Image (tube, rainbow, N blue to C red):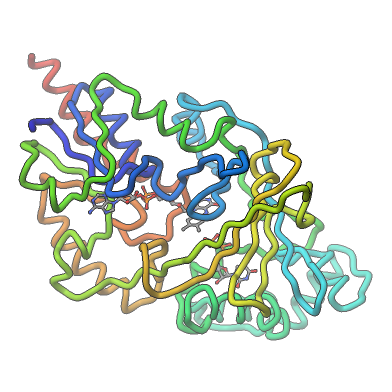
Length: 372
Ligand code: FAD
Ligand code: UDP
């Protein structure tokens, strides 16, 4: 087989690069070892006809006009602002921590200024702020840290907050007002017909061939090509020559509840202190689907299994940098995406990374056209 480019992985990073390169005139073969496209964003109707996300809840949000405009070529959107409650002291309280969280938890009646004063009085000043524990203690102090963050983090990562880089907990803002949205981004919408449909449109291009259920290892020597885009785990590409980069995995327990219109009051309920799972998500909130029943997913974190999360810690970053040096020395291969760049990227950040990664190849194609 002969193509200009082989793209390994049909998730956001692979599909965006494939689409851009195809538009620029390259012939592209996209392969994925899974039986479907869309990577971890894959959605499908379950047996009962409820649209679910097989690999856990995916809520789209971005501040990037470029990313929103790019994806809007392949989907219409429905507005959705995600809300999350955390079970603490047998109550469901807003997370990110806001004015209502503090007033309800402690039986107070503080206004915005009062909450800011309260947080100032309980926060533990940490210098420098390096770990996720530093981030949380520095902003909300020990009691809120132990109630909302320590248990959840231990479950999610198998590590204490103090063992994780600050950027993990820093994903969750702290608010003094009553804003109870999980994300603050200006663009918060879900693809109207789902993620998989959006990917189908992205890959529907005369220059793109898609083959699923195929592993890179089995294809590597069979496809003649000028360039490879690799979006799988970077350590696997180099046969773990420096050892395994740790990725955190999850087990997803999906359940359909017939005849139940609403299982919980918001899209996601977090369980920082109880249960082996971290959270339950009810998909109908995310998708606005009408159905007489409802479908939920529980997430059970684990060490083994499909790689879902890079684990942000200084020693892992140091190991990644060794692999990155090898990757940088391969000019004919582009490494992009959450697994290949070992970055705790959201979907929009992956799209931005992919759009950037293809720029040199797109520019080269333009040069060829001019010369041709
Ligand atoms: P992936 O989606 O992992 O795609 C990589 C693909 O490469 C996979 O399909 C894999 O099968 C394939 N592959 C790997 N190795 C090989 C090989 N050797 N041969 C062939 N194929 C291979 N982001 C948000 O913005 N909002 C959210 O709400 C959100 N929720 C999330 C919830 C969970 C539980 C998880 C795990 C992630 C969530 N994300 C969310 C992050 C989002 O999933 C990622 O940012 C995005 O999917 C990464 O895209 P990717 O293409 O880099 O990787
Ligand atoms: N987190 C927490 N308690 C919560 C929510 C989040 O301790 O109720 C911490 C936890 O370490 C988690 C991180 O913040 O892994 C990032 O949370 P996010 O919801 O962004 O995780 P993701 O959706 O990527 O799994």
